[in-house]
Length: 310
Image (cartoon, rainbow, N blue to C red; front, side, top):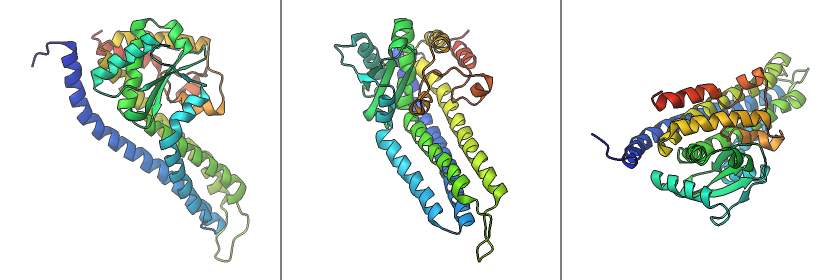
């Protein structure tokens, strides 16, 4: 069927994409949380076996459930607070509001709240548990360096994170990963017992050392895999929503340069937020980039140029 207008293409793509993505994201989310939650329970079970107390198993399950619930309700507030972001009205940021309103209308989705973070590091991120409780945040730096066409494409990318339900997945994954790290550290201090109990059970130093080092690595790999996948998807779907893949490719080039020249100051609270951002905000060496939650920028740009027919 020949499409008569760009809006028709967006609507048709949105209908097909909604059916496909709801299924694929559901499967992806289920696999992610099954793996991460299973890892939490496995650590708790190992600690319980080593210490002869079921307290660790109960504690690990409670922590996994608690952090998921906390991430569901408060991940947006934590992310925005860590960046000292301030909500802006239509009168305060008319161009930003106009762009987001137009893109949200194209997608047939609610308009998110808009925030600006007072930092010169050029970046943007979306947060919130669903489209009805979402926020998009731009740093002052990204507003300063991008052209309107590029900024609109970036906003399309962020909106697709919201509409694909990526934000909740990433926030909860980060929360569970923090639990895994905490439990692994607990193994170091409480799980290694040199002597055996009356049932012949005791702390296994080799097992505990493997637990301490491999559990956080496994959770990081799971996070990395899901984060990279969602970035590629948001690039693709955001470019289609904005109908401008080359503008997003151009924006990514500028952001790569901008974040290299003016990286974000790393703090513990900002590390989790960095996974939500469109570009890696920290200056990293080659090894750090290998384990980054963001895919290589050159690969993202190449995919967008291919999408545009180049």
